[in-house]
Amino acid sequence: MKTIVMFSMGTRGDIQPYIYLAQELAKNGYDVVLGSHPCWKGLIESSNVKFVPIGPDIDIDKEAAHIRGKYNNPVLSMLKTMNFVFDIIVNSTDDVYEACKGKNLIVVSHSMMGAIEAEVLGIPTVNVTLQPEMIPQKLKPQSFFGKLTGGVIARQIAKPYNKIRKKYNLKPAKDIGEITYKNYNLIPISKYVKERNPYWEDRHIITGFWYREEPEYHPDEEFDNFLNDGEKPILLALGAMSFEEKAETEKLDKFVKAFQKTGNRAIIQGFQKSLKQYELPSSMIAVGSVPHSYLFEKCSMVIHHCGFGTASSSLIYGIPSIPVPHVLDQKGQADMLEKHGVACKALDGHKLTEEGIVAAINDMQSHYDERYQKVRELSEKIREEKGLEYSVGYIIDILNQNR
Image 1 (cartoon, one colour):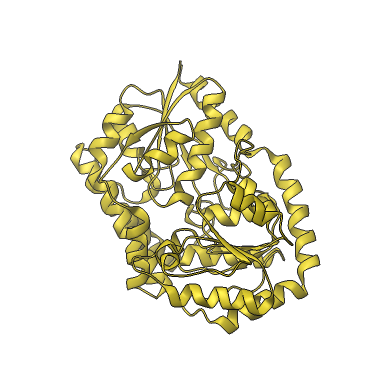
Image 2 (cartoon, helix red, strand yellow):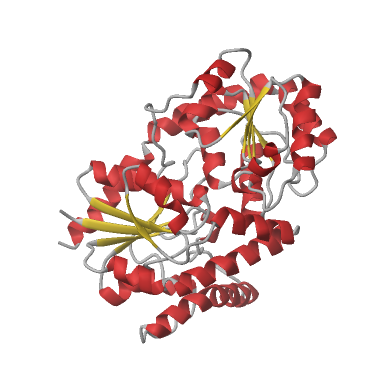
C-alpha cells in the first residue's frame, strides 16, 4: 500500500481541508498520516485519519487570540502570526523529517512543511495552496522595480526555510519558489469563485473546494428542539477569532442585543469564557463543534470571520454572509464574498458596535432574496466540481510517475 504524509499548522480552518483530503485518499486505498499541533489529535483521529504530533504542545486557538488581542492592525497582526508560525516550522523539522521517512509521497501544505525534508529524503511532493495570492506570477512581465521589490519579499519569506536547509547542508534558496511547486500545486477553491491567474505556471491547478458531507451527526435534544421551534436563526461563527484569552462579555453583548433589536433567533459558536457568566435569552442557543455540512443549512445567514473554512462553507452550503474579518487574508475573503453578491459590506472586526451589527443585519434582510439566490446558484455549481475527487486524480498521477 502506498503511504502518504501531509502536515498543516494553524487553527481548525487550516487543518480541516487536509482532513478531507486524507479521508478521500484513504477511501482510494492509500495509507495516509496527517501531522499537526498535538492539540488537534482528537479532531483528526475522530475523523478516522491517522495522526502524528508535530511541534510543541500548545493551544493554537489561545495563541491566535493572544496575537489578535495584542495587535489591532490587520497587517501587523498577520505578520506577527506568520512569524509565530515560522518559528514553529523551523523548530519542528526533526518531527517532520521522522514522519516523512519511508513515505511514497509528501503533500506539502500552504505552510510549506515537508518540502525541504522531502527534498533531503528524495520523496516526491504535491503542493497545496489555500491563499492563491501567495502564488508567484512567474509568467508576468515585470519592470525593474517590480523584480526588485518582488525579489526582496521572496527572499524574506525564504529566510526561515533557509534555516532548515542549512541544518541539512543544502544550499540556501534565493526565494520561496526554489523550495516549492516542483510538481502540481493544488488550489482547493472553486473556479466559479476565483479565476485562474493567467500569469501562473501550468502546474497551479484550481481544483474546486474540498468538503465532505457528515450525515452521521445528530444534534442533542436541546439543540434539535431549538432548531424546530421557530424560523431559521442567524449563525454567529467567528472561528478562532471568537476564542477568548479572557472573557469578552461586552463584545458578546453587542451581538446579543443586536439580535434582539432585529428580532432574530441566533446560534452562537465560541465565546465560551463569556458565556459562563452570561445568560442567553430563549431565542438564542450556544453550541460547540457542529459540522458545517449540518449547521449552515439550518441557518438563514452566517456572521463569520471569513477564515478559509467558514468562507468556503458559506458558498458550498449556500448561505449569505455578514463578514467580520480581523486579519488581512480574512479581509480578502470578505471582499471576494461581497464581489460575488452573496455578502454585505464587511464589519471591522476590531471596531464592532451594536449599531453596526444591526445595520448589517438590516441590510442583509433588505437584500436577502437576491443574495440567497446568488449563493444557492453558486452552491449548485461548486458541488458539481467534485474538488476532492479531482485533486486525488493529480496525486495518483504523481505516485504513478514515481513507481
